Image (cartoon, helix red, strand yellow):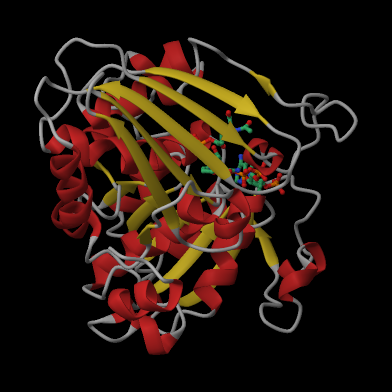
Amino acid sequence: MKVAVIGASGYVGAELIGLLCQHDNIAIQHLLVSENSASSGKTFADLHGRWRGICDLPLQSFSPSWFETYVSGVQDKDQALDAVFFATPHEFSALWAGAFIDAGIKVFDLSGGFRLKAPADYPLYYGFEHQDTHALSRAQYGLAEWQQRQIAAADLVAVPGCYPTASLLALKPVVAADLQLENSLVVVNGISGVSGAGRTASLASNFNEVSLMPYNILQHRHQPEISQEAGIQVIFNPHLAPYKRGLLATVTLQLKPGVSSGQVAATFDSAYHDQALIRLIGTWPKIDDVAHTPFADIHWQYDEQKQVLVVTCAIDNLLKGAAAQAVQCANIAMGLPVHYGLLPHTLADTSDGYSQLSHAAGING
Ligand SMILES: NC(=O)C1=CN([C@@H]2O[C@H](COP(=O)(O)OP(=O)(O)OC[C@H]3O[C@@H](n4cnc5c(N)ncnc54)[C@H](OP(=O)(O)O)[C@@H]3O)[C@@H](O)[C@H]2O)C=CC1
Ligand SMILES: CC(=O)N[C@@H](CCC(=O)OP(=O)(O)O)C(=O)O
């Protein structure tokens, strides 16, 4: 797959490019930044020194004339891109993704530009009118472990948000098995490291200012995303914490009378026993265990008397919450195993990779 990445100077773009460089079925053709970016003309490694010697490609400016030269005006099929990854602001993706799919190029959008289905939600939660409702109607939400068939068929994949990824991985097994009490309160508490806010400097993400605190309560754009994809309304409480990477979502919900611990265990086991990147770890997840990895660690506790279930999922916001999940979506599109290129070869490329991993990590399943 020949690809371009737009947003190569940002945190998510950098992680994505790092993963694409080690993927043997993907070749990076172009790395792009905004038209007037201070990074234009530098190399990727000038900006992100971790990848010096691994990816030294130059950063180009994205513009309508770049699009004409490398996308709409390309005659030779061998020169044409197969896919583009947007690691850009939501509004930019919303504006440009449609032009790529019209040119026959698959889009993996890591922004929120196509995650919500209703156009009316964009002014409300994102602060802009969606200008491309046609492309929006073609977009497919891409929670990799749950929507493989739909991702495989899609031209435009909306890669889930970081908080929604952790929240939905915790919630979906319960909702799919219809264990939750109807019309009861579902509360999601999320905590994210500061890289969640992106690379651009702001007072709120300044080292001296950051202290564990809730933010955007009852108005965060991930609330409608989680509710839409879980199929139930949730209350979402995001918190910013003073560390760099990693995100944790703890979901609390009431189950139906009579649901047993055995049923809950069977539900999670059947949802994830064959998913290489989901670890049911048998103890409460820690950010440090998932930071810099593509894994999601999940644990739950259930009070049968009160029928209260608490599920926690921890991920790296930049990897499973963005770049690694985008690679999973690309793998699905190429017909490869969903975790291809994301794990050491000995584990990833064998059909029993998960059981080897689980065994290595001392997981009971
Ligand atoms: N950070 C996270 O944890 C997560 C972020 N995301 C989403 O991924 C996207 C990128 O996030 P993140 O990497 O954190 O953000 P950053 O601010 O770190 O990076 C944004 C990138 O977009 C580029 N960009 C900005 N405007 C334009 C434009 N008009 N045209 C082309 N490129 C542009 C920037 O380039 P330059 O400024 O050099 O021009 C930069 O490379 C966002 O939509 C975010 O919501 C998704 C999941 C998790
Ligand atoms: C800590 C922090 O600021 N986190 C960001 C979420 C991360 C992100 O960029 O959002 P997407 O996953 O929707 O792309 C926020 O709350 O807006």
